[in-house]
Image (cartoon, rainbow, N blue to C red; front, side, top):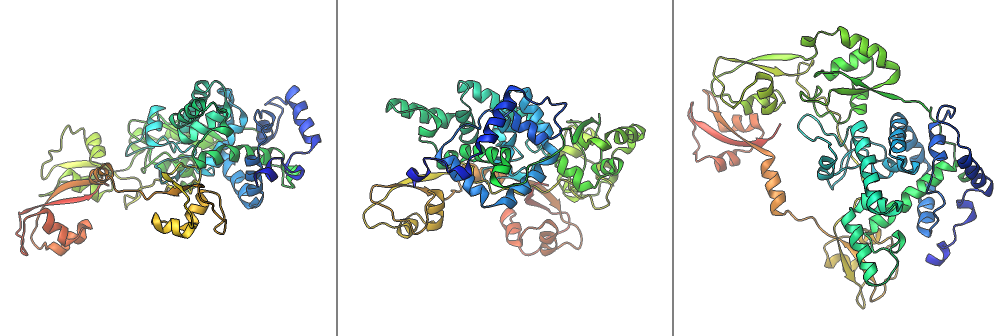
Length: 493
């Protein structure tokens, strides 16, 4: 199979004319102002298109079997493509890297992976914070298209400098982590082997990740050679960044911009709640054609009408946790709005609760979409095949499925495996102490004062907990008394 793929078939390569044409364009590139197609502007600035390898061919074949996907990602990319390409150009990156969100997230700003990566660029929490992407109850900068794009292009440039200008190693380290790539280089150096990307003992997913980008770039850049429609989109910004200066209810923002609320949420996927964060960022991405009217109408909106509030009278037995739960907000948000330094509140007093312009206090945040990212590096074990082994027997040994082993190792289920052959085996994720700790942290402890007419079943139903847990958390019998306090562990709102 490897020998058959060593030479890329002619029908999978761009024609000689198109290659000559692209070289001519490099000598005399179309200027950004005169180019009408943003896709062509990207193709004009390719730097990695001459890299050929059997694995690139393999990925080209895979993509060509699914032309519908190629059509879908072009449509998804359209609102963000100009913004992303401009960012890659500012950092002097190869324009192929503007297509990286295709591989990372399928151009879905709400995408997240099982490895806790999120957004178009699939930042994990720690790397996101390292590059200034805030992540809190109000906002997740990893899903903010503007902020994450600036962070991702800076990160890619930094990685490229660390790997002495080698773009394949840069991409590998973006996927697997620079520590993994350095370790592979060190291992090959010890064995006096090549330290190029193609020779390194990297995770299987990373070995696929890099040729996948090269393949998609080649297909889109030479669509006609693959009998596909030429990608087209206007070479002008679709989105504009608007400074709103203060908090703003998103429902009001959508009405002012005259766009559907769902569209506003999709374009500003970093926002977790019904309004922009109190401490910023104070901006929104708005379709360019709507910007002037939006700014004009926003300027006329009084500051005290930018948010909708509810006045809540504190009753006996209530605390900030209960009130936050009732209004689908956070204790921190209530404290900030009412300038409370602690948690002490008094019966009969009033609190201002930010609730949004709908009556049900809904969370407006766009729902994050799970993205089945086959490029995410998963935990695996390496197993050496023994005599009389087959995929089914090995799967039984590791409590997994033979299809998963085959997929991870790019084999067919019927493939004959030989003694001495090494296979990667998917590992089950264990419920580690750290994981258990994070689950405990996701619960909020509150105290509830029992009122007249309360029963354990009524309280359990009210807080969506079980009666057995009420007994577990409190030393109580079957009977409860008004005024008695109960401890509850509930999910953080």
